[in-house]
Image 1 (cartoon, rainbow, N blue to C red):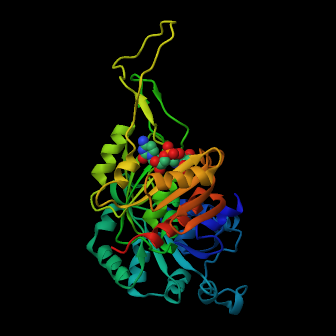
Image 2 (cartoon, rainbow, N blue to C red):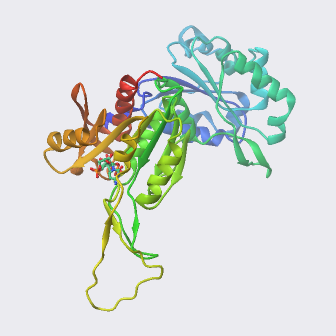
Image 3 (cartoon, helix red, strand yellow):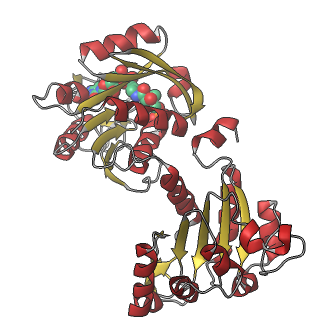
Length: 403
Ligand code: PMT
């Protein structure tokens, strides 16, 4: 992983205490420990006695690179009191999994083991990821306890709905490690777009020639998806109109899948109601086959001629609306970026455009970009698209007219 990846996520260098209570989902916490470590987080694990029966301290020690704590008193810990020392300087305590029993103890303010005492003695945020059987979760006692924790300022992450270890299906599954990392990241992201609605396009379009063939391009969707994720983390209601890509929906984002440019335009216009900003990251095909064939074309050996019709320019149409949202364009150029990108911004009368080189931006995980707006050009040095996305969101939030 590059250094950039570590900077990006707003998690690098943070100290997180991961509390693991007793539940089968504890096995996922081992993966979570590794995932957080990969993001540059300094993970310190505190296990309850029951938690240690599901996954051994040794596993967490190997994955976190730090000593794992289980007891209230420890001769090796400064002052012999891990419940005080461990929480010092922590950016957050995340309890995952949090069993029904542990949630009840937290709600009651009990301090009868290391983890509960640590939570009580903390001066940092506490996040809790419940994991239990659906009936335990739905029980009024658990719901009461969860409400108490929320009223006390504790952040509850999940639970998810789905198949459970007990064979039942319903709410109570712990969020997946990747979702917990994303939730932590969102937790630490400034809410610059709260109360705003952002519509984005991403990926390529696929313009059908016949039912199996078509014209497309090599946009992976990574830049647009990173931007959608960054908007959602910043608190925006986020709608992503996406061409065909192999990416999963970012947390907190509503995705609308489309194929061709015409469908993309229809879905963008349908989603625009109440939008504060429209961000066009998609590499939309400029042309489409004028008359797509309804059946699979047969090979004849003869040359064929494909008649192409121009596609509508979605961004230009949105920007020309009488009450247009704040429009952000993208431009991928192979050379003379400043000239072409700023030219496109002016031609489409956009308040902001992000330029990138085809050689940098297309397909990969990193990008080098320049933001162009009325105040000039603002270069964004090479970095992962997730990091570039966060900087673009900051600029959008800065330039967005106050609502
Ligand atoms: O998906 P990735 O692999 O991560 O790659 C990201 C990217 C390189 C595709 C992205 O960063 C990018 O630059 N997207 C814009 C590609 C481009 O050059 O678009 P354009 O010059 O054809 O169009 C300029 C702007 O108008 C773009 O905002 C585009 O979305 C929009 N447009 C263009 C044509 C059209 N018919 N409708 C549009 O809305």
